[in-house]
Amino acid sequence: MTRPHIGRHLAALVVPFKENSDIDDAALRSLCQSMLKVDGIDGLVVNANAGEVDALTEEERVHVLRVARDQAHAVGKLVVGGVVPFPGTNAAAVRTAKTMENEGADALLLLGPTSFGRGVEATPEVAGQYARDVASAVKVPIIYFMQGPMSGINYTPETVKQICSVENIVAIKDTMWTPLGFDTNVKLLRKLGRGTVVLSGNDNCLFHNFASGSQGTLLVLHLVMAKAILEMERAMLANDLNTARQIHEQHETLVSLLFARPMLKMASRVKFALKHMGVIPSDMTRSPISPVSADEGNAIAAELALLGIAK
Figure 1 (tube, rainbow, N blue to C red):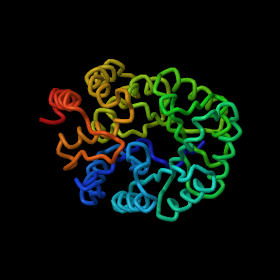
Figure 2: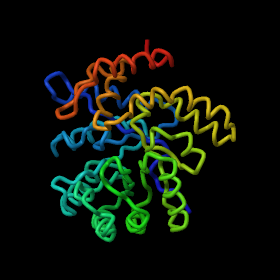
Figure 3: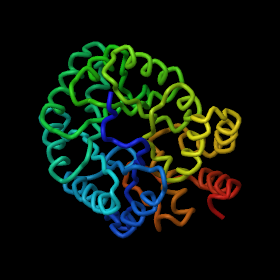
Figure 4: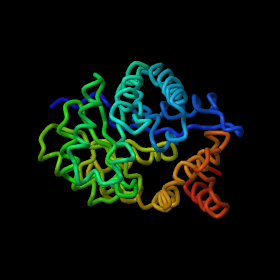
């Protein structure tokens, strides 16, 4: 079966803000360009959790997509537009999906509404209908964001099956956050037999995901260490387990610091790292996302220095 045109490795963007909380367009363009220069990164993802999508107005979401689109398309790479319905209805998701498509998104990353956190596992057909309504409204391929229990949504195997049985749901971003959760989805989708691509969104267990069938990645962690991630995958594909494990173990502490609980602070930690690396000028976030603490910042900075990623 032909792989859908969604790329193999996609970088999820943060949105740099100025100190007055406005979007910093120059910094956003520079961030896009820095990722697009990485050999092996096929495209950019905007308007997802890493991009503080819940803190962006609908107009800002379109603006961020346009900036990333212009940079990605200029060098022949992809841009994926996140679809987070506001308000949390099927109709709003359809409207957002159409807007992203009309604005030039090559694919969509579809997230479930917050109401799914109140028991969608008991009515998996509701998730299936949500996916069907959006998928039938657009022509571009859709990646479904399978968030794990830390998101508050319980994507059970039956719920995953309902969603991935929908035409035009061509891939999932698996963020179950455990090797077991990832393996469960990989096996389920193989059995389903629709050729659904499984991209790892598990920044914390990439080594295990590469070993058990990941077909690519969709990660904010690419912003900090894309080359190491790509090198780890190449080693795994070459059956060089020792090299892959070494890369994993070298970066394990940094990853643990960036993605420690509470995940609410993931964006602020990644932004701190990027500022410390000189990639963006400010690690400003919008409330209620709080900045890193002094202890968090010191630990992240020390690990970046140890790895030679920043001074």
